Image (tube, rainbow, N blue to C red; front, side, top):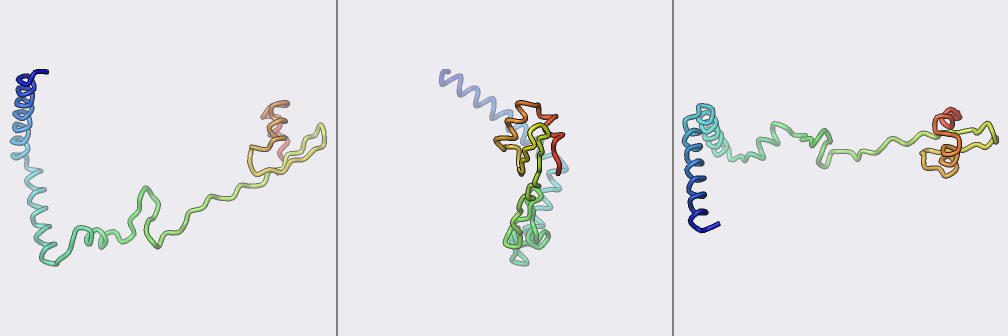
Length: 123
């Protein structure tokens, strides 16, 4: 792109942004927010407080995505897996496992099918 074309493009973008800025200046909602911010900053200065102080007062126990943060939060642990006992009625063998990654259980499932092996579950 030539320097002249780049200049014209930037000039056009600047004109569009200036037009958008002028439109926002006449927005009543923006005027109300600017007024609120000014009054809030004056009030904060009057009491020598920062925005962080106000947030700490309004929400003393902040959460992030439903998990409490800070020194008072407890460590969240997973629930322990339950022990499952499978009894093979064909061979009489028994397997105790807490997960599905057991070598013999996988062999049974590949040989007899997952649904059939799950029916062998005793507890």
